[in-house]
Length: 411
Image 1 (tube, rainbow, N blue to C red):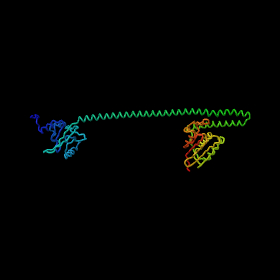
Image 2: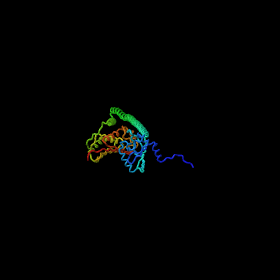
Image 3: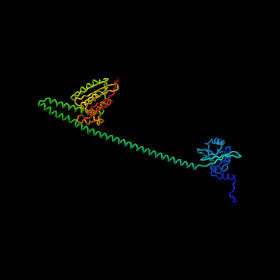
Image 4: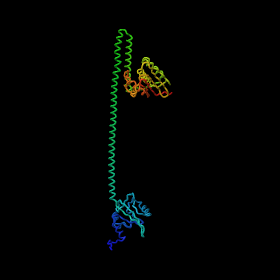
């Protein structure tokens, strides 16, 4: 049988050794909150000599700003139990010289025949706090750097986006400018083509007819002479129409034409205009006029006359001999409507979307005199009076133009 050679220590000796040589501070507090025991580590931690803390209140080791500690101690005494002190809080101990140290404290209550007591285990966490502060500072600095980097990235991204946006705008502006330049060049080409054809033909007619007028005058053939005089008049009228179209377009482009409405009788006005236009009609063509509704209107009568002359002269020009042309005006409380209907060559479906463009002429109108400006001018005039223009047309079935203008007269 072997005998243990381990030195026997009593419980009291074990507690004494643990108390004396523990690396953390230990104090024992009585029921009244006074220190009855403190180990060397505690005395060293707080800067006291051996036995100097005995009999002092525990608040001696607590900074004055925690003045409510005695209240918490009394509350704890009513229901003592092992726990860590100040969970979620930063705890500090006060040294003899008034300095403070960050600490962690655990409490363990016990009782014996002498009364109730609490053992407090105190750990100096100064080094840990410094490490935490350093880590916190580094984390904040890192976060600041990350924020600055993020801001720089956002700023540079924004600058890049703005540059791309400006580049896109410039590209679009350049594209628009190029498109306008292309359109302008096309217009110039079409104008030169139109002008060379439309001016050359009547001028050639005038020159040839003048020589014939002189010749027929010399030989006394008056009928032939009158015939060629009329051809000269027609050619001059055509040239005048071309120049009027050019002048009207130029004024519209420059914004020199504005609507100046006045009060007049639209039925009488239209009837007189049609009498004048009837002189342009081909053999057998009749311009029929119909009106319904009120007769007083408030419009720019000069612009309306230009619209009416343009539409009716077109109807005469594009309709065959002996085919009637209808002009209808209607006035109600909301709007004024003008319709011009012919039984002419119509507008091919593929040409209809281009009908109001400058210098545009339908494929089936190549052999008929015209500048391709009339309907563009009409559309611009209608826009000036805040109206709308639409049409219905089929090839070889005729065309009807419908203009609606707002009625500003209270009925």
